[in-house]
Structure formats: structure tokens, C-alpha cells
Amino acid sequence: MNLLKLLQDVLSVFSSIMLYPVMILLVAFFVRVIFAAGGFASEYLQRKKQAGLQNPREYIELLSNKDVRQVAFQEIPCYLREYLKELKDELKEATDKEMRIEYLLQSKEQQMAKSLDTLRLMVRAGPTLGLMGTIIPMGPALSGLSQGDIDKLSSNITIAFTTTVVGLAIGMIAYFLSMIKNRWIYEDIKNLEYFTECIIKNEIP
Image 1 (cartoon, rainbow, N blue to C red):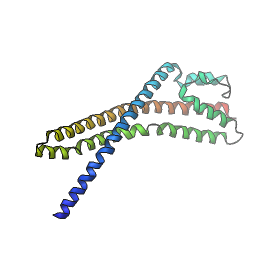
Image 2: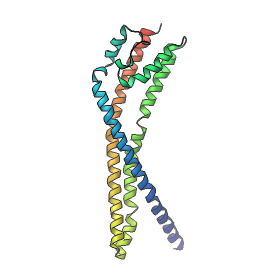
Image 3: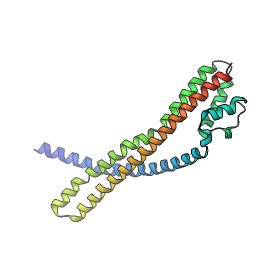
Image 4: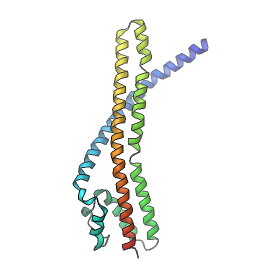
């Protein structure tokens, strides 16, 4: 029995200690998801402004009578500008152009997919931390209830409810942002592949 009591005390201490990191992480993730929402709104407005340039055929026709090394960056969608800069450098190389461009395309696709990692983490971590922040204070809250300590009970119940709300909000916002951004990235990757294939056929001897 003494061993069981010792284990219970150790786990209770660990549980109490974990409450503070959980609350700190919830605050950090909430701030991060707010910044992510701001970046999402900015990207949405930018994409809406350039909606006429999202079809790859538009800028393929634009390049049809121009050298890709001379095309103006403002004439193409914003997500393609960085890729085109790197593509121009690869086209300057004298050998293995097709292989180098294929590697560049795969690297760009991997980079675009990796940009969702933080949102995907918050989709999982937000509700999990919220649940931990709910369960951990329930022990002290029940203890306060049994002792008739209403202040202890109310403070721990408040922590439990607020962490739940914040954790679910983080998960919900992050899920919405990741769902829309995943759709954008899928469309961008498809356009990059089409664009690159046309460049390889038309520009590489």
C-alpha cells in the first residue's frame, strides 16, 4: 500500500507540473494560429487579385513568344516567381538540363507540402493540449470540493473550461486553414508540373 501511495503522489506531482507547460503551449499555439490566419487572409486576397493568372495556359501563352530568361516577374502568378528565378538559373547550365529541372520541381513540391506541417501539428496538438488542460485541474478541483474549498474548486474548473475552449479553437482554425491551403498547394503543384513540362518541350534543345 505504501508503494501504491508513493506512485500516486509521484504521478500527482508530475500531473500538476505538466499543467504549466500545457498552458504555455496553448497560448503559443493560439498566437501562432492567429498569425497563420492573418497570412491566410493576405494570401487569399493576393490570389483573388491574380485570379486571372492562375490558369497555367495564360502564362504559357505569355511565354510562347518570349524567352523564359526575359519574362517579367510581374506578369506571372506570385507563387511561381521564386520557382521561375531558380528555373532561369537551371536553364543557363549547359548539361543535364532536364534532370536538373526535374530535381528542382520535386524540391519545390516538397517545400510547398512542408509548409503545411505547422498547421497539421496544431490540428492534432490543439485539442490534445486542451484535453490535458481539462483533465489535470479536475483532481485539485475534486479535492477542493471534498474539502469545501469553493475558491480552489472554481479556479481549477475555470482553468479546465478555458483550456478546452482554446484547444478546440486552435484545432478548428488550423484544420480550416490547412484544408484550404492544401487545395491551393495541390493546384499550384499541378500548374508547376504543367508549366515545367511546357518549358522542357519548348525551351530545351
